[in-house]
Length: 507
Image (cartoon, rainbow, N blue to C red; front, side, top):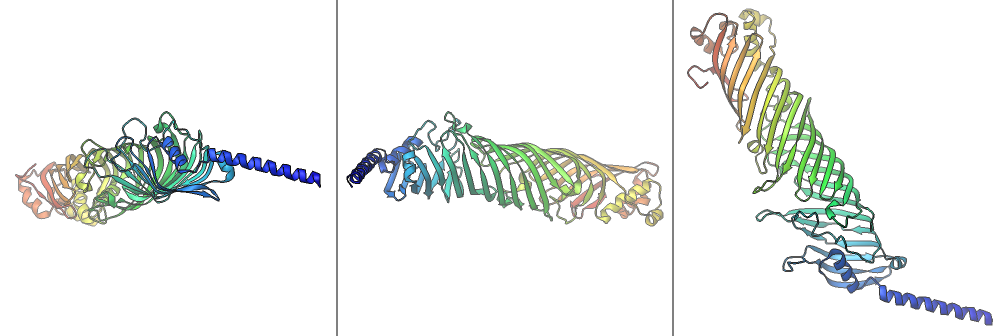
């Protein structure tokens, strides 16, 4: 009995000693006091932190801070850079001893991001050299947060970003963290989700911190870009550092539409690009877009310009093997493209920000169409008859044995302010050729072309081609032997243009 009593008293003494020591340690190192939390945040973010109200919790151990504000370092008169309606921290008793946090939950987070100053350091990120007693955090949750990106010049509108879900896992010094984020993007308006790894944190240069992962961008409404419509979806991978991220992915727009066109087309693309996250400028390394049987290769840049709100797209475009009907579907008022044939195109295009796609776009290039034919039989008939006439067939023979004459089309185009100027336009077919110059209004769809037609056939045999009455009237003024030259014009609405002689008119 005495021995048992001694053991009991000894055990109680040890328990009291341990509890007393633990209480002393906790009183000295307890991390969940207003002063301790404020000091930790100020040290980590290198700025003054204010807390409206504070409550400690014991089961589980932790705290709840309300109305937390991170002030500017210099401009104390400005609204806080970071605000949180509530910041809740919880851990375990073992976690307290290990300086470990199980979870941080932030409600009502609002972050104002000033424009980059070119230093590679973010004014709202934690202090790179700031050290704290917290060794690790299992999870940070900050759902329904708001980011406000301030413009780099006065008069521009701030860019808001709504973060629906944000999770950060495994925050440990010297190791990468895992993140999951979903947010509402504004241009084009759609849902962006991403997951990946960030870090380890670069203490000398925040912008050089590595980042990688996967992303998906869905339900993106292209109406944000005036003159376009369609719903875009994209997914792919990204990697790089915080200031410059490379993207590799694919995009799909099942019903892409340009204002003024009668058709919606299926547009698909794969791409490689890099984004400067400080300016949001994008370097387009390679785009391979597919529509119908046509592949369009593009590269260039989408970037801001001094004194201009928004971004200007400047791209080099190339089509080596394609179909002219696939390209005309973007601009034609008709359900069926007016021409079919194999097309080649080399061009440079620029699209500044703002409404009016067709009026804003500028394009300079050269093109060729092989084996071209008009898809409307009434429009193709003149070419067929001219070709047959050039081959020496009589009108009766042409009617008895109709055939489709294929032609080759070459030319240059310069499009600005909604008007495409066509030059050195040549149209040749079996036994004849035409040379033209003129314009095509992308907005009104009015065509105005002038040129000369040369044919080796007899004009009366081609009467069903270029308006029989006009050609018969013109016959006395033209050469009647082997080679005949006819000045002509094509004008009016592109869907139903009129073709006529151009004596004494503009060449």
